[in-house]
Length: 474
Ligand code: 5AD
Ligand code: SF4
Image (cartoon, rainbow, N blue to C red; front, side, top):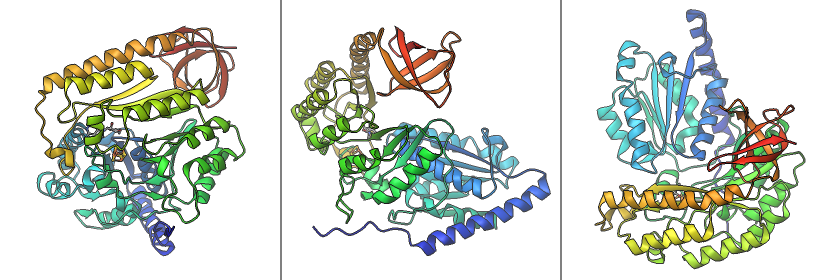
């Protein structure tokens, strides 16, 4: 097989950005001398975990550039909105937020309002922002993220508007990152998607699949473990395609094995998997690797083969059932979750019935359900669609109800069980003051004298409810 390594951003370009980081840091020192405090930055993320990981990179760069992180946009000097395009609702929210900033910009014209991420990578958006949102000073797409220091420098040194949606998605290694506090971390293993599901905008805004080199991923994992992170999620739009574009001949299962050998007390998760590429080898590997959480997010989108075909998903409902049966046979304790789209163009009551049946038969621990949202530029945007929105909403409600009915006995089955959990925060319930997650990712509220945020603990479930397992340390 003739495979070329994914294009990396050349080292001199990375060095150039590190140099811009220094230059902006110098501007920040001047600012601090004049104002008595460091310049302040506010970031807000819309959308998926990949976007959250990207925001952590932007935050890392802001940190190195001398910015203090703030939680309120009104107090910030640089405001950065990392946007999502996967559904219209996410775009509307981002644009609503930006619209509401017009008066702040009038009061403080020197602030920098920035928009980045998937929404702005769509062809029609930069023009729309240029025309209708004069308060936006900085706009850059997913492929230009690593050039943020240079773009910000240009803005801070006099350019009124800096727009950059160029680039083809080269992989940039070696730029700073500032992760959220807590025991959990994201670790991107690949970017982009080649699948072109007909409803989905992602391949158009994040480009083709590019895998990071296994050595870079392992290096980052070692750093994360050394920093004390305990629950690390490997990220990619379709992790099962990992390595197909790498010359080193490694697939996702082999990557998991390699990462599982890294020393330390931590859990590895991954998302998202695609039923067309998820293999028995992957489930065998999951079962064999002690650090890989027995949790699988495997979106099936629809239970109807006719709809799956029109979605260009590349599998049937029967194949999906087989995969789950195999995974459960190998890992009886596995927790399962899925994404489902309700109301895809042309979905009939019968198609929807098949989705409902799949949900009821499989019994998922978690479901992420979405009403179909038309995305311009995708093939499905031109598909005939005569189901009234009210009918789609009614189906959506029926699906949620069916899911709750499936989850309840699953949650009840945990009553009295002893589980290892990772404590990750404080809860609102004084009787169970900590929140935690099971290895399978289920929410637990727990109590106990030696519980500590960021530590593993063994607890006994004493009160299961629909959304939470209440537990006590043993
Ligand atoms: N409309 C509704 N949901 C969508 N998703 C992706 N594109 C759309 C769309 N146009 C959902 C899919 C995917 C999840 C991340 O978002 O279920 O798995
Ligand atoms: Fe979108 Fe399909 Fe790619 Fe997932 S696999 S990002 S749904 S095109």
